[in-house]
Image 1 (cartoon, one colour):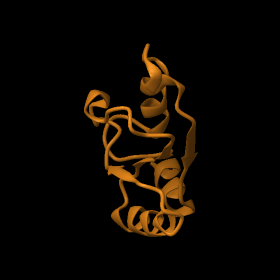
Image 2 (cartoon, helix red, strand yellow; image 1 turned 180 degrees about the vertical axis):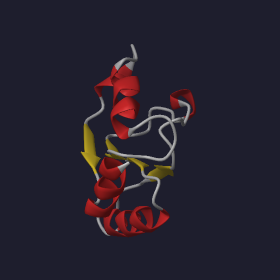
Image 3 (cartoon, helix red, strand yellow; image 1 turned 120 degrees about the vertical axis):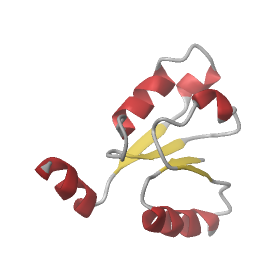
Image 4 (tube, helix red, strand yellow; image 1 turned 90 degrees about the horizontal axis):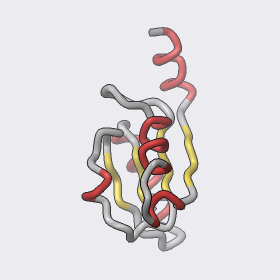
Length: 91
């Protein structure tokens, strides 16, 4: 699983939880991460909806869907914390 999350705390908790199910997780912090460096070893993507930087989690998902290879077919889930949503909606 590819985990795209800018909060180190949330990423650590999520990683620990997924590890209990023996899922292999690769964590990236920003939506600007070059997709070509990620490879094809992922079965799914879990991404924070909001993020630091210029691109959001939606942008990250759009970049994946716009590809013309197997990566574009990955199942994706977007999540966010209430705290993160409050901060982004207020700004």
